[in-house]
Length: 343
Image 1 (cartoon, helix red, strand yellow):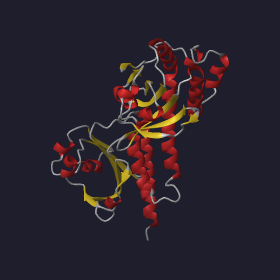
Image 2: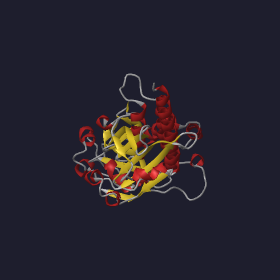
Image 3: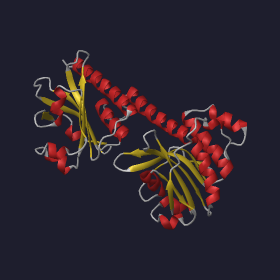
Image 4: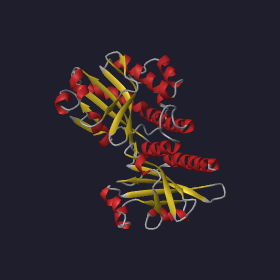
């Protein structure tokens, strides 16, 4: 198995759609790609790649994190059949190797022997594999471009393919991030799906947990009768809403949430259990970091807060910060709406 440094893209400012690559040797192909966005762009890129390379498996996938890493195919083909929205667990696969290392994984032969627990490789009899991690602007792996064959491949053949993928990798990363943001915002705007028991507070907690790929999230309302306490509205742990915790009343004293009585945001990047030794749950659950965001009404009166726990520093770049602000405002609206309905 060969792992090589992921291509970081061309240093010049040439638009990749203007570059003639082994993939797009015709002007029509380039024009077709340039006219597409989002899901259509990903599918068109995969279609053109497959037409030229004739791999047995080709896909562009997104990394989805709940309690475990999952790979969800956004556009792809296997033996002539579409794999759109096919999802599988990433452990024991070369996909996870590429994502964890943020480097290209190349296996020219014997990929089944290298990853004997990968059921797809074994079932489909695949011999070689190319995995190209899709990185966002912060060099974080958010997805993967995958190709696999039932035959051996050569270094020269794969190098040409990598040149093509590298020309379009930044655009693919942008489209994956846009799809992710759109999915979260659409779900939040719609509210809970009809026919499900999930309420809006559970939806907010679960979407934040999925967005940031963190361990746990809860949303809370300040107690109306005693401002020293808050009530948990929803608690999402590893992708599952723990309904048994809903309605639990807790005191601000002795918890990091206490800081949110006066601060808009409070963050602990590491050492949470040491900072609050009386909260045994932080140590037993393995929570090491904390992010709390205050929720207020239009007059800056505290309504509640949302809290994020993780076992590593919680990363919130520009996109995540903007989305968290939207969740905060939606939570404020829903708390005030619920209060207005009370007799």
